[in-house]
Structure formats: structure tokens, C-alpha cells
Length: 518
Image (cartoon, rainbow, N blue to C red; front, side, top):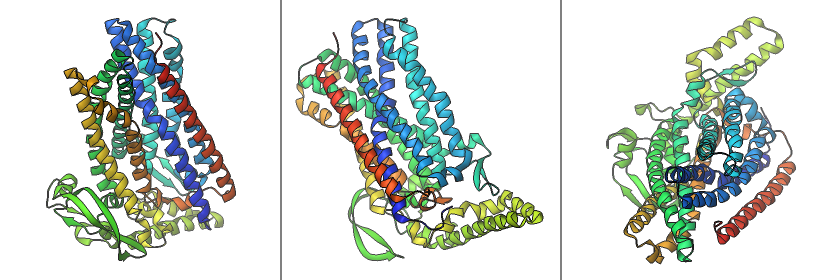
């Protein structure tokens, strides 16, 4: 662990990882969704035997291939950063974080990389059914890859299925299935892949709308909109459902994040759900943290209590409850958590001293302490709080959490509306005549990307200061490297990723302008 923390090193390391993750996530969701759209289109081709569907599939497959290659490049860099910039974190999580990533590499990545060559180059070399199977396996492999990465991330949000080994100062996995079926992981996987399906559907809809406006490839555009519209509408409904489930889970396992994304400072019964609002700062503070109030808000009375507790009279804790504690509902104060965390840290220090002194009796006794359920439930679960200086430091950026969550939700409902209108106009045969909607569909292409990035902003910003919820703060996770090194690589990555993004967009635009091969 780092005793003397260079805050500028922490900030630059966070910035570099955020930069890499944001760029990486510009490519990944399109891969997740477009792979399944390709599989659906090719299935229609194999079923009907119509060459038009083969032509449509090959056109969208070309765009998929451009995106797929660049997404892999950014993902590899992202994984390496855990070792270069966050080595203390990598050590502390032990085999828990590494196991899902290893499975992802061995199983999912090899699956998609094996069959992607057949998918792209095997049209005239293998029979239709084998080619179709290859396309489906690429889609399944890409989404299985996302599963294992999201399992690893979910463990950081809600650490389960492990035991701390004081001898190595590492968390070790004791229940793989508990890690895999962690409720946060289940919610995160379903919400993330469905958002990728939605994004890819909007991508296809937007480009197809552009063709209709230009009166080019009208048959291809309408058939593509048919698939994307149905797939997109179902996906957007699934996104809404899984998002609601995720919020319910967060209210239990990350209650401070939940209160922050609702900007709820004072807990209450019959708590209303904020549809949207504008925050303003006040003269009030919790410690040194500013308290934000609503300049105005659109609120549905009682709904937040119903969604989290199943009853409008259910009490929803606010940030003040979590900082100062609330004995009536069993919430201990952050100050008490800090004391419990220091107790666990002192136990680890005592174990290290016993090792140094070769005190075998003390070593054996302390090993038993770390295996004791009561010790783990009361003290070690708050191990990370030993690094928290003041109780209010566990409050994340409230405006950032609030706006990222609510803008994401608003965009989610907008997508349901857009896909519904597209299918309605297509069914009536009037889609080409409604240029106003074609423009809306075309200009909406960036919106799912924005919504998807906002989701990750909420996920990561909302759990600050934790890199592992309650067990390790971000400041304790960084590698002992120079700040200058991180700044240099940040600049290099920013230039590289921007260049890759410009290249992808340029190649895609040229390919779209050229249109499908005849």
C-alpha cells in the first residue's frame, strides 16, 4: 500500500484510465449490437434464399468489421493499464479480478476471433449454414466477452465471494458462482448488452434514414429499418426494465451512489421520484462538502419509495443518513465505519508485526481472526474506510451523478419513441414521405453513444472515492510511478485514440457514401 500519496498522480492516473475507457466504449456497444443484427439478417437470407438479404448483410458487415478492429486495439490498452497504473489495486484484488478476465480471453475472445475470419472471408468458401453459424458464434462470443469484463467490474461495485488472506494482503476467491451471479453483475450485463443492441439499432436506422432522404438504396434501407426497428424497440424496452432493476439493486448495495444520483440529502418516507430537475448550490454543507438543492424539479410523488421498498411509506435513506447514521433503520455512521476499518487495518498491521517477530502463536491467532465471520461482517467489510480522512469524503460528485443518471433515463424514453414511430411509418408505407422524421432519425445517431457514456460516468463517478466499494479507495490503488510518466502517456493515448476515431469515422463515411456492392 502507498503511505504517502501524490494526489496529482492519482488525478492523472484516473484521467488516463477514464480517457481510455471512454474511447474504448465508443467502439464496443456497436460491436455488441451490430453482431446480432448481422446474425438476424443473415438468418433471413438463409431462410428465404433472397440475394437481397445477403447484399444487406454484407454491407452492414463491412461497417461492423471497421469498428471491430479498432475496438480490440483500445481494449488491450485498457487491460494493460491495470498493471501499469493500478498495480496496488491489481495486487489487492488477487485472483478475483483476474479470473473473469482470463476466462474472457480464453473462452469468449478466442471464440469470436476464430470465427470472425469465416464470417468475413468465407462467403464463397463454406456453405450457407456453416457461415451463418459462424456469424452467430461471433455475436455470442462478443457478448460473452462483455459478460466476463462486466462480472469483474461488478465485483468492484459489490465485492462478494472472496476471503482476505493476511499473509499475502490479497483477496482470494472462495465462491466463483457467487462472483458470477452477483446481482450487480447480472443487472449490469443485461443492461449493458441491451444498451449495445439499442445503439446498433439506432446506427442502422440513422444510416438507412440517410439513404431514404437521398433516395438511394431504398429497398435496402427499408428492410434494414424493419430489422433495426423491431430489434431496437425490444432492446430499448429491455434497457428501461434492466435499468430499473439496476437502480433497485444499487439502493441496497451502493446506497450512497443511489442517494447521490437522486440528489437526496434528507431521507424520507413517501419519497418522490425526480423525473428531472436543476440543481443549485447552497450555503449548507456536510463537513466540507457542498449541499445541493433543486432550483426546480419534476417529481412523481411516492414513486421512489414504491420502487425501492415496494410501499409508498417505505423510508428511503438520504446522504445525511449515511454520513451521520440512523439507528432507527440500522444505518451506522461513516465515522463508525472509519473506526471499524481502522480496527481491521490494525489487525493486519499486527499480523505483519507478528510475521517480522516470528511469533507463531500470534500469527495463528490473527489468521483465525481474518477467517472469522463476525470479524469480516463487522470490521473487514469496512477495511477501506481506514483510508478515509473525513466522513463527508465518501460523498461523490452529486451534480455529476444526478445529471448523468437523469439525462440517460430521458434519452432512453426518447429511443422507445423513435423506434415506435419508425415502425409505425414503415408499416403504413409512408416512411419515405416524412422527411422530418428521417432527419430526426439521422441526427439521433450520436444520442445512444451519449447515453451509454453517461451510464459509465454514473457507474464510476458515483462510487468515488472507492475503486473497490468499501474495501479500497482510488488513492490507495495507484502504482508508484512518476506523475510525468502518466501525463506523457495520457497525451500519447489522447492523440492515438483521437486518430483512431477520426480514421474509423472517415472510413465508415466513405463506405456509406459508396453504398453496398451490386
